[in-house]
Structure formats: C-alpha cells, structure tokens
Length: 130
Image (cartoon, rainbow, N blue to C red; front, top):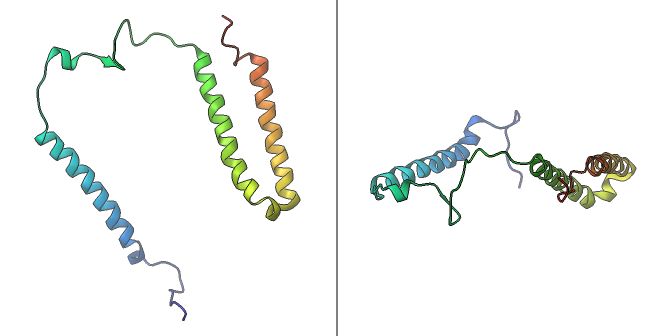
C-alpha cells in the first residue's frame, strides 16, 4: 500500500501538530509561573534578601578580576568537546566516507593538533606559575 503524499511537498496544515505542541508547552510554562507567583509565599526579610551561595557567606566585591587562564581553559575544554562531537559520526561512517573522509579527518586532526601545540607554547595549561 502506498501513501499519498502531495506532489509539491508539505502543506501548511502538516505543521499544525507541531504548532499545537509548541503552544501547549508555552501555555504550561506561563500557567506554572503565574500559579507559583499567586500561590507562593511572599515573606521578605533581611536574611532572605541577603546574598548567599553554596552555604558560604559572601565576602568582598563580586566584581573581582579573574585570571584569564580560567577562560582559556574553558575554551580548550569546548574545543576538545567539539572534536569528539565531530569524530563520533565520522567513526560511525568511516567506510562509507572512503578516502575523502579519511583525508578530511586527517586535516581536521592536524588543525586541532596545531591549536593544541599553540596552547602548550603559550603556557595556558601551566597553573602553578605566576
């Protein structure tokens, strides 16, 4: 048995279930926020409004400078995380991609290794030195 599909692709009515689901999700979020605001307690106090994080009292200015090495390490983490995201589908389709896919991955790994060598040369991973 063959399904009858429109010749010119999808019709606007085909997207109606997606729009309904999106509308229901949006309505649920709005409903939950409004009900929690109306039903929730409204007690204010100096202790409740004070800054508090992880069980430790706040000390000093929150705008204290942070070492740039922290941000560079985060970028390195994202770089290698993205590498894994690209390598997994490549490994799954290794045989289907053939030599072109292999050469593309060699180039990708070369550029990734060049970035890693640059990181090592700049000393970003050396935390103990001032």
